[in-house]
Image 1 (cartoon, rainbow over the protein chains, first blue to last red):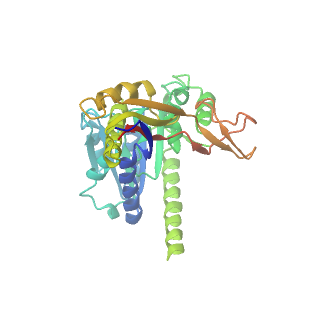
Image 2 (image 1 turned 90 degrees about the horizontal axis):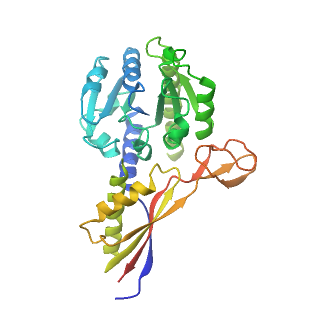
Length: 232
Length: 115
């Protein structure tokens, strides 16, 4: 036996998840589907917002959704009312979705039949932040009833997301929601982050949100075409 | 709590590497943990004990090196280390620093072994 020695490893602990996520992202690119994930605390309105968005988008786009939940299929049943294809991922005791779960959930789906795929994560503001799901855009939702300091309490997940949605805006006055403070806190943990105010009940911000997704998808498709053009 | 699944991945990686370099025993696993990794060091330590139990890494120690968030400040044209993840602003000029260079890593960077 020799003296103890140090050997360099330099391996990313999440490399398996990241490899699956990279492969998913490539498949999404090839199929031309733009993928959006949603993260938030439990009860901030992910499912309600997504049901509304799917219902409105249905007439113009081909949309589908995956929804993660610890134990029930209630959310999938709610989303299925939109008539969009929906699949439940039951995570059991796992507090977040991983790329492999997305991979197996879409195994029998023909991705090229979709323009947009939504992935609703398990309600949790901590664990989902570290796991890449191959999405093109990550939304973090916070409702007006949750307190304006949510971003400061959970900076990692806000920093890992691309867009913040403030939900339940119809309750803003009743909850004495301080919009300026909320915006300031979001900008502190994720400078330059785009923020949209939405309400499912009054439909505030819903069409703006859909227009934003369409614009993101268009520029995404254009950037892929440009890349392919350069490499050919 | 996702620290247990992270700890299990650490044990798996360490075991693979230990086998690859013909280690007799793993004394310590050195881990770099970014301030924006979303992983709690304390929770990870206790999870590591559970994950390593009943494996050849049972007696190994998890040594965690905390990596602060490093950003690029476009105004100062400099890299800056941030004291807090609650305020992504340049400590020098106070301007916003959206460009994160490091601080998200969860990386097994070395093993201390006997051969």
